[in-house]
Image (cartoon, rainbow over all chains, first blue to last red; front, side):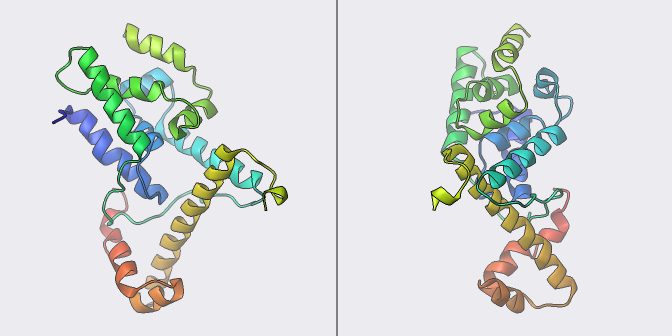
Length: 154
Length: 69
């Protein structure tokens, strides 16, 4: 069984799925994992990207608004989503499961006994379009190869 | 139908579908709460939404203790 550090468990199992629930999404995807990594303002991910969770939430709202507009629907998503939280946690998408698996692979390559934040971050940074986390990172104009370089250097 | 739309990019179109779903869920959550505040029963809310009383009650009845969750 995969061992997760306490920090990453909080990210993966709590913050990411809470973000999915907050938005009213049926599944927890890679973009929710990314937002989970940003949920703690002092996290490595926040430092490397130089953005906080609110900035990323706004970027997602803007992407949604632009997509709706592109199909002829002129309505803004709600600024302050209010959705149910008593429901069970949304299951992971296949993309999110794959990213978690890649985090396991990265931890093994490091010879690390546990999955740490940097392993999941490395997996997220290597995602390709049309992955939703990648779309979000691109919309924030984040230089992925530079971030990866700084991650490996740190 | 696509000819009436402005984009033929699936990344954009599928995101629009997700965005509509999000919007629907967020509107539902907002108005279910308002309906409750107006004294509507779970059965009345379920009927208005075209779903069972049970499913709407299960979905929202515990949300008051989880707002900041």
